[in-house]
Image (cartoon, rainbow, N blue to C red; front, top):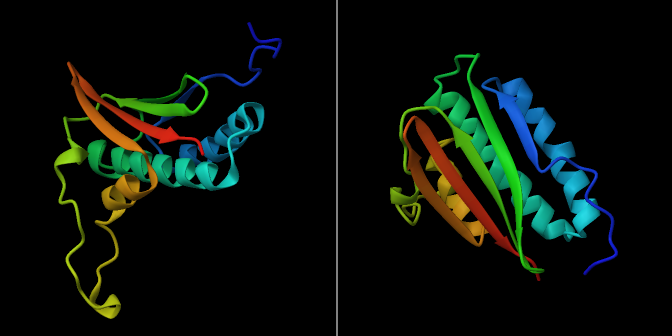
Length: 145
């Protein structure tokens, strides 16, 4: 049994479907990282993946309409694995069926947008989607070095 005190940071964050609410995620992740001694490169990956996932829910799932909820939950799995679980009530969307690679195009011809899911796959240890009766659950896993 560990002598470490209970984590003072809530393990779940509730957000409204507004881009402004995404600003609450970074300080929450930083506080969790400090308590759980998550190394900076992993914290960077977590923030990148959560920003992409949540921005996609707001922009595409909720179509930039405020008033709907999203939650992000933090989970640990042993000493070296953790995950963040994003839940929403937007229409079903499975990001795991997106193409695995970006087509090879010169940098100057690349379009802005459309690469977020690829970034999530690159920076996360795992990305798993589950349809909910009224929404989506996206589990983004990370393995600590």
